[in-house]
Length: 266
Image (cartoon, rainbow, N blue to C red; front, side, top):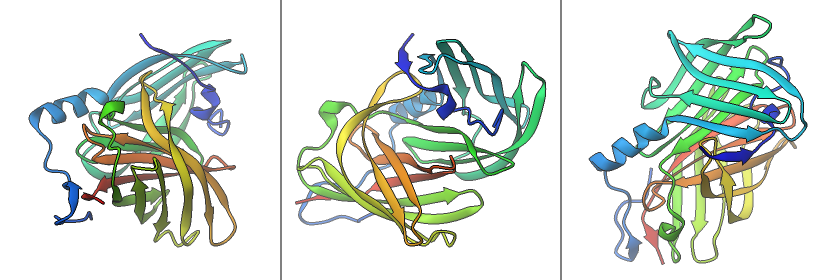
């Protein structure tokens, strides 16, 4: 059993209470191939998790359950200093999906409608649960963590993919320089905010809900209409073939994104 330090309010928001590059002659590493059977099995396993947590503010949180289509996707419980979160996302389909469900606070029998939006690639995924007010009450990136020793150390690559923000869809372009261990990018196509610039930031590690750490990037983001977000992403796949992450603003409204790497070139 892994233990991580996390404020459960980042998962249970108060409102629920609260095209990748093709082949290249100078490619150091080619664009990803289809996943192997071993990779597919590992990805399926990553969709189930449970972890103990330490609650930083020492408050009690009523048990929260997210259900959809007759299945429990996420359960969380906090009790003055400790908590657990567990999930099973195997019922979510590949690609983008948007389904309705319910969020239930078991202690008070309070139930409200939620929308579960998800994108699953071959090696990673991102799931965001929004309540009726649009607040992101659950944000879950997951997948096959890239081992630190398998993160490329030379060359550059562009990750491209999909973005979702409530009922809007957009596109991700994210450029990574593996030699300087940094990345920056943008989100396009979300008419609500216009282009969102994901500022340049360096590699680091962050904790996932399964208790493991993932190599990724965390930074700030800004929109053309002056709204600011923070963003974080992780590298997934045996050789950083994919990334998934979230950008979130001060209103706890999350933007989910997923990208697939093109060829790594000099």
